[in-house]
Length: 284
Image 1 (tube, rainbow, N blue to C red):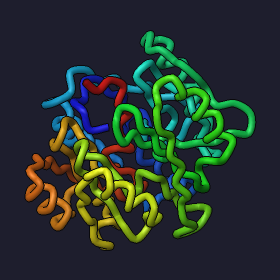
Image 2: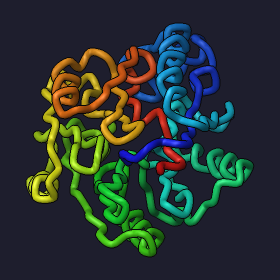
Image 3: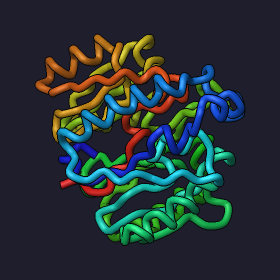
Image 4: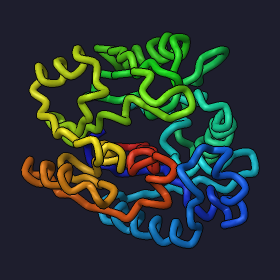
């Protein structure tokens, strides 16, 4: 999740938010903090994509669909990629479950391999799955990802994974709020992670330290501003929502290059940072 990003899937607010009228009707349904400003969201997204364009050779855009809602702008969650192709997930947020079907059609059209799909009672969001390295997969067990999904993921990923780690997530702000594993950890290099330690199980934090991973500690006020949600474009080259000065300084001190984008409308209001806005298909 820190190697050079070569191909990524995103969804433009034109296709996800649709219009100001659509936002006015839907933002409470999708539990946004307040109604986003559509025109400002489009401007913010332009700045975000300009950063991606500098580093990513291929950017694919998901199409508009009447089957999905505002949260489809967060292209990371309906799928997770392995070295061999995509796993189609099923969100723990029922409003988001139709996204998987649309995504599956999109991947098929683009001839991107699909190696598995969650079935039955399994639910899982992409934000609960973290590759610590090429052979270590970490899955968060919380309100968005259940035990059956973990069982199926373990089976699907077995050919590519040497170590499969399950992290129990806390209740935190409750059932309706979105807490993912990736809410409190972002890998920026093989030995550098941005974390919010107050939400981390002790065993997991100790495991990272034992593996020689330096921890960038995000303060509470910056965690609330998605400071822990950091997208690696390449080892120690990353993207951060603006306004997280302590996190940014720590990253710079660790030798990282940091790009910032204005993300109030597209990220903060829907609690989805740069990792959520992107679904990395190929990292080299």
